[in-house]
Length: 302
Image 1 (tube, rainbow, N blue to C red):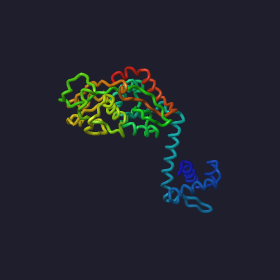
Image 2: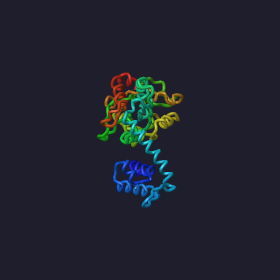
Image 3: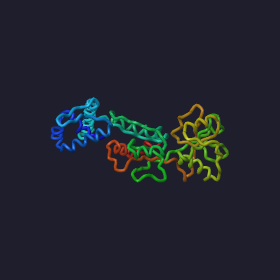
Image 4: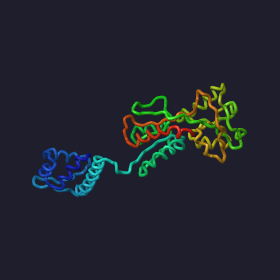
């Protein structure tokens, strides 16, 4: 079933005459009749009673006629809105972000964007990189803030933003909780809570490589997927964890966060913004412009 079949049916339903309906639609009666037969085949019911002299609506056809007319009106109104442009409409910006960006960079960026567009609707979806990329490719999201994977679809444009600093999360009464800064040497023998590499490869590799570069092998007490789960395990005293610095306010009544010195080879967790190649949406372009113009102030606390 398509909109043209509905138009043909409604025209015949109004005229109750194939010839006059075909003339109004500027098409051949035989073509019009074929469209109606295809429509009846699609819906599985007979919509018109036909004879050599008369055309009438069946009981099902009368109900279908009313609903089809409404659908055509809605379709035409929608098409007209896009033909004249949506400048005066309330716009929606759909943003996807990994957990740390949703807590840190994105709110700060929206503080710059929203005053310029006070009537815009902002929808934010927090998820992992592996789940956000398909949503961007399908068009459900306009932009995503991710940890760029090793390979990415050529249809996606990516811009590196910064490397997020990391802190060591320890139980509140741990022997290290009073330290201002630590290195891996200070906790080389401690049990560690580490993210699952399948879903958080950058965070997983950072912890593993932090130990490896220092010549140590981490004692892994537990693998966990969600940051909140990792922090809950730390709070319970089951191990320590390396997490993005933006998490310093989470579980603060039971977890201490200590500045962590990383070797030059690691630097931190990469954060990038991605969007569909060729997307010229004004909201997207403005967001990219704000990010470029204010990048220093937006990233200084990450």
